[in-house]
Image (cartoon, rainbow over all chains, first blue to last red):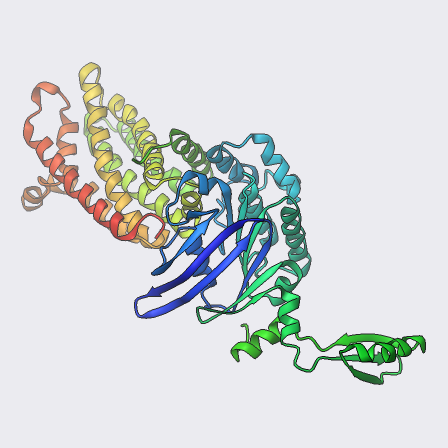
Length: 282
Length: 233
């Protein structure tokens, strides 16, 4: 599969404040990776280091095997980015915003129409960015990021402040990109989003990676109760230990035909984060 | 070795042309002095050269300074500059495209001012070249202010008094000897003097030495600010 992003012992200090502490990660080609953490955890700083916007105090970061601090045109053409601020020209329309980057990347103008179609903005191609809704702006920023078909996409809080419907549209686009072979690195403090989208996640707290892995596996790891609860239609419930011995008993409950729901006791990522760090995600 | 991409310069330049057509604030800036000069010289029975040199100096000094500072600071504020840099547009390419845009837009009016003054032939060309020289000094000063500012408002707040001082100094100097003795060391005063009699045979070395000195100081100031702040900092 190969490694798209590699970082070893990355730390970043701003004056006396240490924002990142000894962060090491490896992200494979074609996966969606989520860097999770509350505001101020160091997510955006790590993203800026990876994209060569700021240097790390210590450690090394590599994109496709090349030192990301040595920004060369090959790296630039293989990455796309959606920043926390859209960075679009508000007076220009959607098409002209994309046209600028199509010219810079040497992309055919037909591709502008393609990406506008992909992000469902074809009808608004001639609308000024200043007149778009927040969700449309975010979709346009994504269109700009994928215009040159990058191999690696950085998304900084891609659905922050968006309604569930628009967030869902962005999620579908991200999944589609993964299917096309794009590696996606996203930062978010939305654990539900990460659990739904990401192949791997890392929980970042006060500049340190406190947990890393597949979301479901992380949740299972912190499943201290390890029980299964069956809810009946009459609002009564029965709990069983989550092991092979309970299988027959659970099957018997289903045979009764009164089961309304079945829940396992696995915590969600948010609960895991609180367990690990003792703090909430806000 | 740093290579400069003409394609990147051209792309940002084209974007800027489209953007300015929808940015009345900056567009007015480029039109105000040529319009005033035209109205004044056609409505008043004064020699065209009087208004052309006064408003020509103001235009060459005030407009590029304000426009450059405003454009760069706005791009910084709206994060568009960072996106450009992350798309492999080098800071020098960006500055060259914005600089050439402001330079061209400012100096289109130079031809109008020279025409209003009634110059022709060598004088006409000298007049335009002197205005170009003034706009270059002013543009670099504006770039330094744009780079050093966090947002458009702070850039305008810093650029406005400076632009006013430099552009009005030549006019104020004509009323006050003390101001005159100080203003003779500024590029705007020398530009104003040269615009009044733009004939090659009357040119002396002194104004060009002073303008060159001013240009050097402004360029060093820009380099200092650029190294300290960077373009996307």
